[in-house]
Image (cartoon, rainbow, N blue to C red; front, side):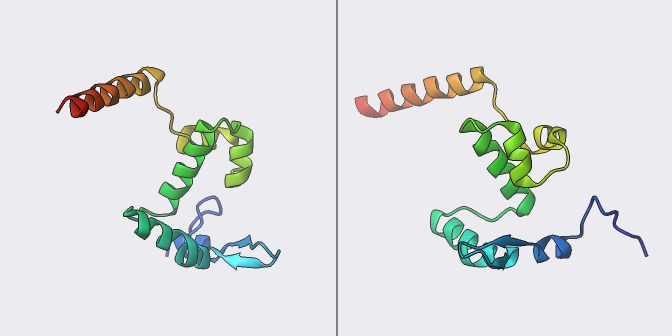
Length: 114
């Protein structure tokens, strides 16, 4: 039987972790998922893609909001900021964003003309 190294917790172990609730008590990650995250995603028509995708999206959005990488690392509880930067924060080149804004403006203009 293979042993999972401590740096790679099993999925079951990851879902047993807890977070602090508003009242200070601990709350299971599965409860957070089932009570808060899944209903919100379902209402928005967004499929659940797993915890890794959720954490990657969180890191990327925090970064886009101007939160520094060390703070994001601490929120995600990574031992090394390089892991956060390399595997979790996904940035788009400025040129790609600018190009998409130009395309959006052009499509909006076309829809106004029609």
